[in-house]
Length: 133
Image (cartoon, rainbow, N blue to C red; front, side, top):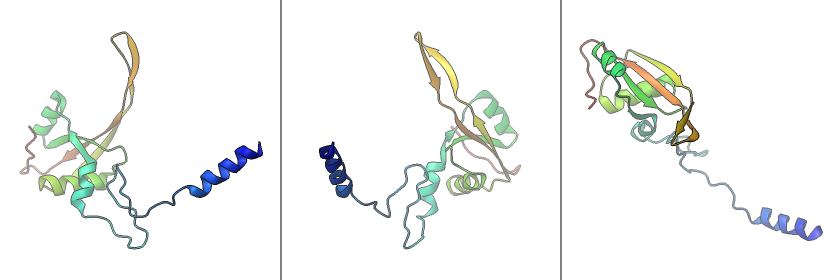
């Protein structure tokens, strides 16, 4: 028993300390305690907007000035508005977020779960448009 405890103590002392300044995968922000600065908005916006959601309902709402995007699960309305402003060069007037719940599916006789997510409706002024192909 004492041999196992000795091994555990050796492993704990050899563990590497946490490094500062590592990049987070989802948000794109760096963890720097000393400077407190974040990277430019172009790197953080790449993780917010995943892709435009192209469906019949989304196409109908795009004609009315509302565009639908799949966004990161931790994205806020302000993050989404900044990402659309930076990527498409338009000013959104309103952003609405909807959570997509996970759903149970059966594919080839096997049960599974289709992962949920988050989608955002981005409303623009009447004169502005986004080219979604």
